Image (cartoon, one colour):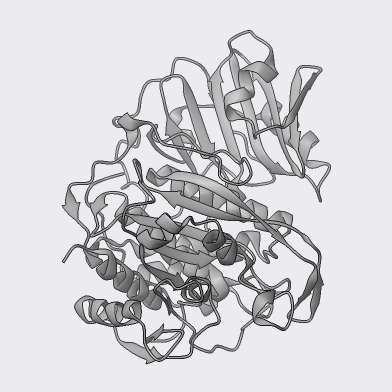
Length: 460
């Protein structure tokens, strides 16, 4: 990731929300530029499969492997064929505790609703991972066909390429994860500033989550797909990422019956993070009510979280920052205890020592509508609310202070005695409906909120 970041114009970013995108999100390379400069040489054939119309978006290149991302969190690994058992070779790239079987030269891995497909072509082992097959049993066969028929390609045919960085996050339940390698972590040398935020990252996340994945009820396969994509993005930025299991009951979410099941929190921490030392938490819920694509509620919050995390990864903050995409925030019943399951789970797992180390939490929830940014506290006021209002003044963003605001994940922290506040909550017509689509979201408002968060995190 470059040390310096260009800020996209609001007009250019708005175009991303209103048009389909077949390439990688964010700023691409300049026309005619060498897209493979600094990328390691690969000494085995590469292929560029297209799965269900989705072409490669971005690739990280090591000398011994290439890992490529596709829409919806699907990943492709290409490595030199070691002429060994396929399942053994695939172990570093498989999900934890999955099964693996090889038939007619095709390896198929599976864990719950997720599958992977691998085979060898011309001395290269290709492996699709994170295929959501629970509701699409034909996907395994289509994935194998896509690998068999993929055209041979150079590195520059695999989307936006960059030298290999952190190892992708694992998907073990309740606390397991994988940290980036020490030699690939970004160098943090300059202090964070509001201008370091790239709003195109937030816009791209809104388009991906609401435009491609769509409704993300907390226990659904679509939610898991979204969580995997967010985990992959945070890992790519250089964070240690874990998926924390959240068990939720059956109930009714905004008039729709929802089943009991498992959701997850995606938790990202910086390298060498000490949870017992003072730190800050930035969170946004990833789930939606069943009928809504959830662009504003709450792909907007997740998008700003990712944009801020991207900037923080290469900048110095006043305290270390934990980023959390919470599961199961949306209601499953009428009482205060029938929602916020993910953030309540996160807080419940904090030891007394770690709770004492949380110096402030900000929940990003519905942050892409309007021209003024609501800054809410659970009571009459809150130290984090006051800090955010001051940060907004430094960032040049207009705000409106709100009290009695308990309808977001910051409330799980505040009710446990921890300081927390919310950004967002401007009313809009598409709330909890099929009309909550990417066009609802204002890129300018995403940028305002991101600048406020960056100013809050920056050294001062």
